[in-house]
Length: 302
Image: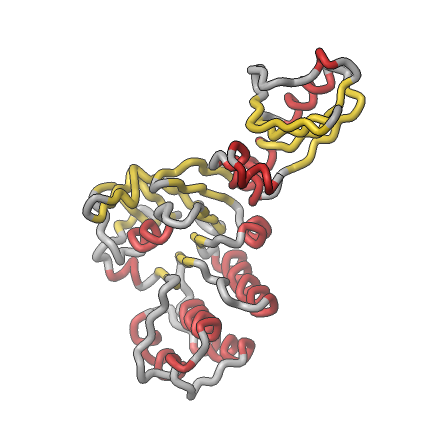
């Protein structure tokens, strides 16, 4: 597993990470999400040992990461800002990776290079950004990492390539119990691939949960009552918290936090004429956890 405890990092007068903790279970896919500038990239660079945190602890399977070569040989990291040696092509990069990573698989490299259809002879700096991301993915996955860390891995890739990328990731998670920590703005894709989610805001962990638990804890409610006195109006009830409420004629539309059974019990006790309980998407959860339902952007989206 990947365990991050009370991580802090400052750059001059800017606090990038503020007592951040992350827990990624072995053999799972964990999605780290947040607005731009929330500290996601800084966190990933600290986790992979690229940056030294000011304080806190980072371990992988209880092993310290920073300046630990043996642990880093088992990490696959694809940053958002890719770097390649200017004169290297894919084949030369493969030779370089094979000398660094002890679990390198020549067979896996050949299979993936063929599937993605990239030229082994063309210099990588002459690839498009999307092709460079594919090359980085092929090289990283061919090293058979125990821990895969990805920063915006599918940004700029077409739908067919994205599907192939996730197919390889899921296969390695299932077959080798590879542990994956991925940061992405593509919340719809993350929703379909991740087991757990962490929402970061201003360098702090705002919320960390299994995705199934997260979906069961926050809901969209549409309800209409025969009597105006039965309406729900930001009341504080046990196990029932209204995060956002709007009225459209006789219909109330609410975002509610609480267990599904409790929400149903409270609403039905008021004898509604109409009652729909709709699960929220990860994108909607993200917006409301960050208070988006209370500003103009949230109102436009919902």
